[in-house]
Amino acid sequence: MKSKKCLTLIIVLKSLIGFAQFDVSIHPLPLIRSDINISLEYRASDEIGIELTPQLEFDGYNRYSAPGSNRIRFNSVGFGARLIGKYYLMPAKGCNKWIIGPYLKFRQTTEKQEGIASGTNFTGTRYAVGFYSGYKFVSRRKIIMEIGMGLGRAFISEEDSINYGAQNFIDIGNVNIDATANLTVGYRFGVKE
Image 1 (cartoon, helix red, strand yellow):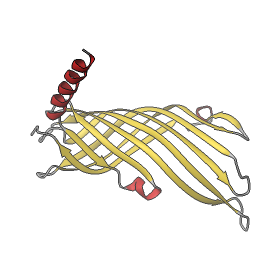
Image 2 (image 1 turned 135 degrees about the vertical axis):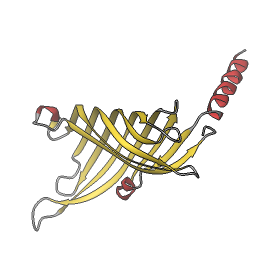
Image 3 (image 1 turned 90 degrees about the horizontal axis):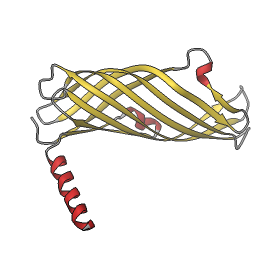
């Protein structure tokens, strides 16, 4: 009985995915910092798309605390996700041209400091909501390129460390402003045209 339900569910999901259109794209600029951001966009209709961008961060950088002093090495590991609800204004090829819509963003980063104050750990958490606008190009060969930007508000922007305890940066001035950007290249999969 359970195997029949599982088989039915698999067949229904495969048939839905077979008729769906997905855009898969990569963000090339974060690769310089060893971050991996791959966007997956599902086309709900010619005017509406939903984009999910999982984000992985593997970064390390050096910083000097004062001239002539020892260097401090920061190793950073993080993960997050961004969800954009896209409304396409006057699309010609379905889900292309001008885009507007809301976005949600979550990010958590852990940094470990090595050097002078070795062993200091920082954990940063950020939840944000905002408005996104951009433009998507789609070629005849289904190559896509998107450029866009969004501004919003961070509802949670916290940093927690062993030495300093928890700090909420929303309480400090205008640090609660959030920004997001898209510069992606990818390919459109699916049968809709």
